[in-house]
Length: 143
Image 1 (cartoon, rainbow, N blue to C red):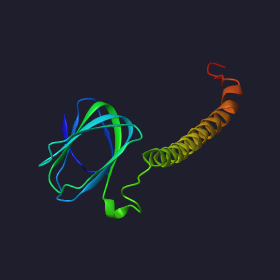
Image 2: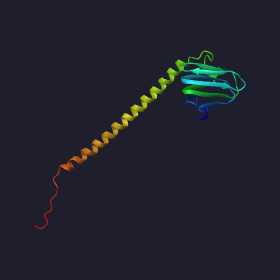
Image 3: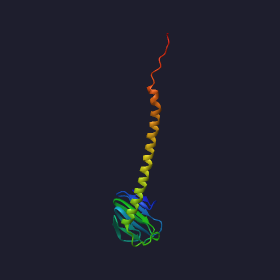
Image 4: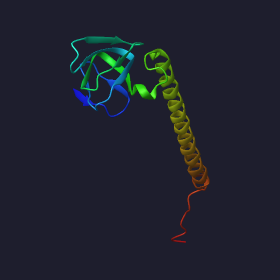
């Protein structure tokens, strides 16, 4: 599976390839898994594990292939304070905090929706109970 970079935080399944070809240099920080990175015009192969990062000085095509399921961040070095001193673990921790906050908000919204549904069901049942308690009407036909 090959994909083009569409979002800086990317999940890449094992064997998946990410193609970065926007004519700029990048920093690739790996949060989870292991990746193999190669660049156009560079004879080196770079292997990165969770917690490691690589500052690509190349503005050519960069290919990143996941050796294991991986989560990585691709960023512009100019957007970072210290592009040569990226703490991938701190970035990963921040990404997890953001994910946990989003999940907590989703769970809270889901719980509120379930509670609202239970309240509506209780109201319907409460309205139906008096009708169930009334004795059936008997017809006086034939008297």
